[in-house]
Amino acid sequence: MSNPPLNERRLRYFHEVYRQGSIRGAADRLGIEPSVISRQLQQLENDLGLTLFERRGRGIAPTDMAAVLADFCRERQADEETLLATLRDFDGLQRGLVRLVVGEGFMDVVGRHVLDGYCRAYPNVEVRLDLAGATDAVRMIRDDEAHIGLGLNPPADPAIEIVATRAQPLRALAAPGHALAGQGGPITLAQAAAHRVGLMEKGYGLRQLAQLAAFSEDIAIVPAFTCNSIAALKRYAMSGLGITFLSETAAEEELREGALVAIPIRNPVFEHAQAKLFVRRRRALPPAARRLIEVLRTFASARCIDDRSKPERGVGDTGDHHEGHLGQHQQDQR
Image (cartoon, rainbow, N blue to C red; front, side, top):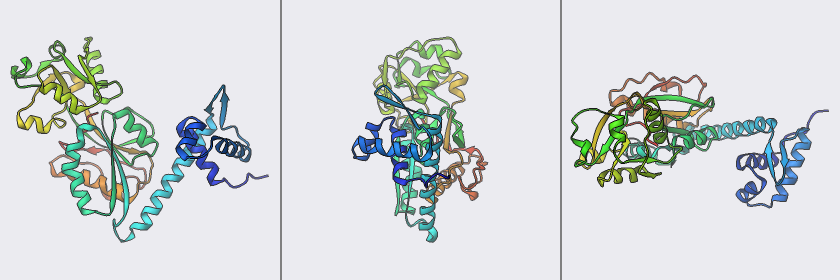
């Protein structure tokens, strides 16, 4: 005897419970009573003949079958979004939605050099821009909370496809009057670590790179100042209280105005840091998102950076993506 057709409402409730990790969390998100969701989940399990959640004390834990069903729900939701967007856009990008998640260090650059022109060219396309650290950005792309991610050394994830990269070395940034500012050449990481240092909180790409660099040289970097804001790190360095580690992209304006000085650091981890543009593997992106990726690549080409990708095929069309290079100012910082 075949299973009954999947009930849309039950699938929606299930997926929200899976995402939130609890029936209460899903109920709060959907604005309905927990008992309603609980009954619908039970009915879905009966329809499928499977156990989707194991009851553990006062909580629940998803089974392996729940993970498979959650992937199905996510893929179907993304495919439906892409289909509707494609049907709407036969006459061009007259409507649409693109969600971009970037590190804070790219906000000014992406806004000035990319989004301004994109939004002017496609005024009826809604752009949603979120700030997130590298780890959170990967999660948002993996869970389809955003179409395109831009991050500094994002953590590897089998669900993520890297579509462009660009070397983005980290520097020690200091106020002009700081002791390191007059070095005149590259310094060692040990020299930098001997001073007061400001770092991002754990979980951000910058913090992970600093820890990896310190580990590679068997030294300790003990932060005197910790925050979750690149703007605060730059303010800390400009005050003369200490230094921080950022790319020149993240402090483009401050360096140009002479408020900060960038000192190269002789450390392979810092020297080979990379910014990466990424999407979810095998996701068919809507036209607005594909066009934004093309704009990002055009920006890279305009700055004389070799782009070996194939934008004419459209990222997400076939899943056969090619890694290219980002422009000089196209790298993530958090």
